[in-house]
Length: 162
Image (cartoon, rainbow, N blue to C red; front, side, top):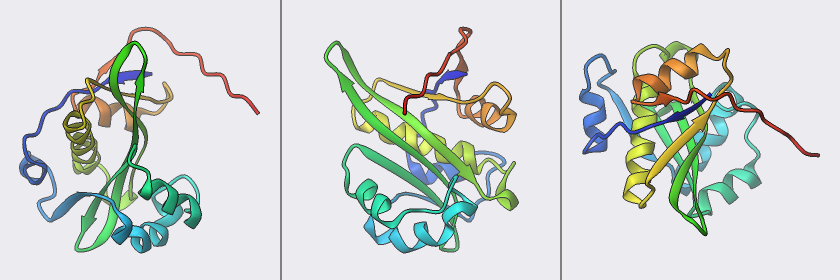
């Protein structure tokens, strides 16, 4: 499923004040100062253990973006994206991964993390944000809808190459 996301929150800190969200959560763009907490949370939040060399490369690349949600300094959610351009299109933001620790799910944290990332993309000049997920991934679909996304009616077929 591909979703077009367009939630507009004027200040990132205001994301915490949206009804139903956990008030103590801090949302921020990750930088090298977050390297240790990112590698520590590892596969509790990301799909696999974090590779330190790739984490460093990601954090130092201006086109890669990672939003962290922290509860008293502990990383409890993240959303990563890349912004890109084409010769014939305006810049766009592709959300590649969103994760929320199990004990923090269904509290609006994933939605706020995605909203923060979308707002950041707009500040970069991205005119569109998009994400794809499996049709069967109800949690992701609900998160993206709650963040203002609209499901595309056309099914997507994915190809992978070795």
